[in-house]
Length: 95
Image 1: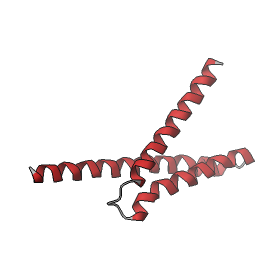
Image 2: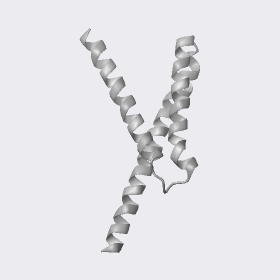
Image 3: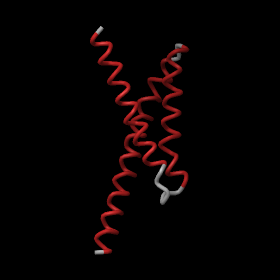
Image 4: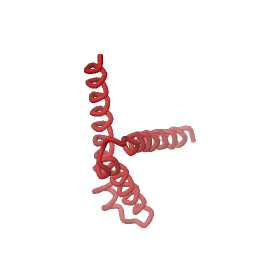
């Protein structure tokens, strides 16, 4: 029972971190709309592919869900880091 609880907590933590990254990128007004919402779209497609497991269509989930989740994390962290670098350059230029 304890291991199931830990697995559920881990899944909630991972999903929460995905959502936090996606929301952070979606709120970046300086980016074009397609770049702001690309991680969100990829996350929704990955979630849809994962839900296909309930319909016993496992090959779609295995082939698509993990790579899309990885793309969501990579794109989100790239955009967040790029914004931090832009902000540092602007702060250094203003000083």
